[in-house]
Amino acid sequence: MIKSIFSILQVCVLCCLMFLYGSVNASAAVERLSVKGTFLVNEKGEKVVLKGVSMGWHNWWPRFYNASAVKTLKEQWNCTLIRAAMGVEPEGAYLSNPEKALKCVTAVADAAIANDMYVIIDWHSHGLHTEEAKEFFSQITARYKGVPNVIYEIFNEPVKDTWADVKKYSEDVIACIRAVDKEALILVGTPHWDQDVHLAADDPIKNVHNIMYTLHFYAATHKTSLRERADYALEKGLLLFVSECAGMEASGDGNIDLQEWNKWQVWMKEHAVSWAAWSIADKDETCSMLYPSAPDTGWKSEDLKEWGRIVKEVLLVK
Image (cartoon, rainbow, N blue to C red; front, side):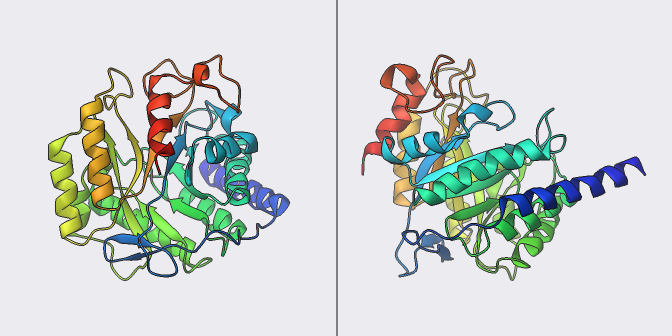
């Protein structure tokens, strides 16, 4: 009973927030993206590869969720894509503080639209929260209905859930999005931290268009075997999007394996796969791109850790 009342209150809060935030107009300079074969294409049918970065969890690094930081990533890093990683489960994340979550996510999404960028609104969860996700995506899609900049990632990294469970969850959430926006691009998570793309390739979601499946890699851990698994998925016709990647170990720490990172760069270029590097954060770990002393935006070279400098350098190569 208490859980039911809490759920109803969450819906009311979310509806009120969406009413206050209003709707957003599309950017005239950004085209609607769709899928064709195993490629992402623009309105002319030409292949598109998006490249950029993922913000860290909003509940721990909200200071970077600001319009100026997004502008910096567009103008100084050459990002065409930014991922707003809306934490779901930890204390202070969406389930316990939806108001803060919506404020952070919409600040980044609105700034991306204003700067002619694409933005992934990421349900950054490691477990199934079906009803809460349906409520969230129904409301957030209403805000960005018809805006081609916005991409919805409906499940960050399934950990213990089977593909059968993730598939059913995804079908339910996709139906909520499609009830509002018939054309939005949707990213579907795959089991085992987005490693088991072969399972989705053998049993894909049917009768739904404009969906892709997420593959995540950390180059010092995930090497040839994962690329071969991804090759298998592509050969089966599964559309892949690397919504999170980095060069160190899967823990986010340890040494950067530049040799394997470069191999992944070659692989993504060869297959025209879009990607977002993890992450804009200042945690004491290898994958966080910024030092704690870095300002909220307008970062100089001395504000960037080694991984931040590597990613920025790759992004600046056109």
